[in-house]
Structure formats: C-alpha cells, structure tokens
Image (cartoon, rainbow, N blue to C red; front, side, top):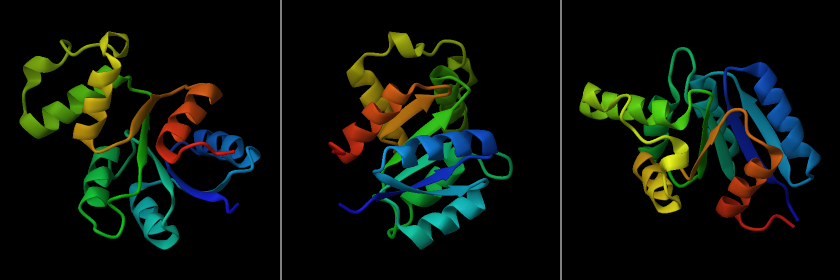
Length: 155
C-alpha cells in the first residue's frame, strides 16, 4: 500500500519534527514540512497531499488566512485539513468570529471544548472548513483517532 502524503505547516520546528517522526514511525505516512504559510501553500501545490496539518498562530500569515487561500483554490480545496493550535479551541473560535463578524462581545462567552457536544464540534469544524481541530499538546491516540476519522482505517 502506498504511503499517504502529509504536509505539516507550523512555525514551531520542534513540533514539526516530533509530529513528523510520530507519523513516519507508523509506516503509513510520507511527511513534508513547511515552517511558514507561503512555503506551506507551495508545498501543498507541489505534493498534493492526502492530509494537511495547519497551525493557527504563525508569523506572516495566520492559519485561517492560509485556510481561506486553500478553500478558494480549486486544485487543493478538497484536501482535508486538521487545524492545530496551542491557543485553545474557545480562543481559536473567538478569533475567527472576531475577524469574520467583528463581534467582540462574544470573546470570553464561547463554550469551552468540554462544553461542546460532538455535533456542535463537528458543525463548528464544517463552518471553519476544517475536518478536525487538535489543541496542542495532543496525545498519540487523539492524533490517530482524528486521522482515521478523516482518512479511514490505516491498516
């Protein structure tokens, strides 16, 4: 079976290294790394990966800005994306809402991840255009559960 291609776009080199080793050691993935959004965009266009990991907080271009570019590009808009961030899901959502609607009153009143039902979390991911959101740090189990939900059984 051919290995699945994965592109990791994250400015934290240590995180990229650890995630890539974890994915590669499973034997199912070939991993490509980009430490900024511009390089990430080019790498996705070059490699046409099966899955993208995209950090939210990065210099030059934030993850949501890259996500908008990806979702508006016919060549790559169907590639599944797992958004990652150390901000926490509520803060992530607050930033998206603040940017898109300018409603600052919602900040601090959004549900914590534990308050979201599975259905609410899935709806939120769909609205944002991502298949999953993983808050750093995440466990190996959480990582592979998210991947298998998106790509199916790996074995």
